Image 1 (cartoon, rainbow, N blue to C red):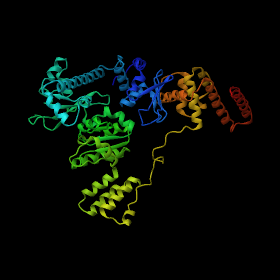
Image 2: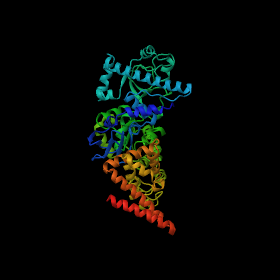
Image 3: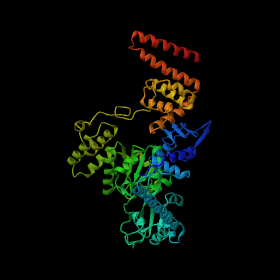
Image 4: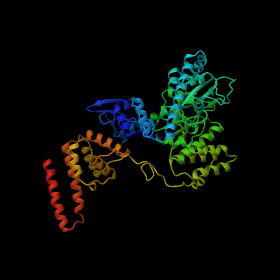
Length: 551
């Protein structure tokens, strides 16, 4: 991948309006020199999210997420640094320049841009044909009959392939047959790849179209299968695509949950009624790329696949993979023949009764066993690997009820390990509470960040005056200059917000720096010989005198 020039990155950051970017995710209100609102990364009632429009920084005092405008785009759009800069460049109309690379690498970059352009123009072509061509009327009626209104289908950019004409139109616009074949728009004969079908554009994390899923509309369709995907190629990899993720990503992160369903129309129907944290696995079980992508947003997963044998297998494969990656997985079971799209209004309520991973596994093992003994053995293998937890007790009760097991038999099914509840050695820790020493260091650095006149005093302190390695690195940047790495960007955002909230003025900053000096002298006194101790005591007296004068 080509590297964006540093000058272009600076130009993008200078042009970007962080208030405009953040406002797309949460409502902001101006309070003094800053903007505040509810955090877009977690649910909260009292606004704790702060935005510095001048320095283009954000920080949440609730979940402690912070950074600059590039980091915000990385977090909310689920892209890497380059992707975030390119996203901002597109948004604020900045022409990017890339470092000189090999001719082959540059050709590859330009080719990918061309392929994306071809797919984008094809999507627009299909959209217009659905909404403007007479042939689209019957398909629009079909969508209406499925309960899908025009607003939601436009949001997902549904379209209609006429079956011919697209390749010719694309060739007129300068795309080569090789490019059209590479993105699955042309077949081996050079004709349109998709017949007369309803088109579902498939997007990457940035919302760029990378392929299509096409639904059969006519019995004489030459393509086999009710649903046909674009051929896998340079842009489209089916195992890496979760339908609707580019639209659901923010809701998944904010609500800390993701629901995976089987069909595209399920996603569309649920979003239409306001249920947003939902994606589709495109008819396949969850894959490692799926789990990895979802894991960047949440660790709470609900699976809702068909109740038939194929659906059970897909559910089990996805569950096992997600559980191994540390997800809390639950299964939403619908009545036979019912899809989420058939009753989207009541779907939220079904999550309340979702089965835990262990409960579902034990139930399936019991139902698949030929007799009572086999059911017990299969369920015992599942439970033997599980640590003690409320979910394990629930699964044990199910096993006892279904097989009518005596109490002594259940007593022999000991858990694999001791419980590890929240806040325990392996559980989730409560939000970080700053120790007094850590707070002193951060407040002192916050003062030096917003009051440049204090940086000479900071330079007079050595790195040893700070305990935290991250704080030492930030001191170096403030004193000597240099670029922030991602960790320092997040710290800069936090310190900037902290200085404003705590109203740390320059006089307070001077006191904080003296407190750091005092702390270091007190520590040095321990173990010092007589001569050294006398010297340190003299320095300590001067520091305390200065503190007294400030008071």
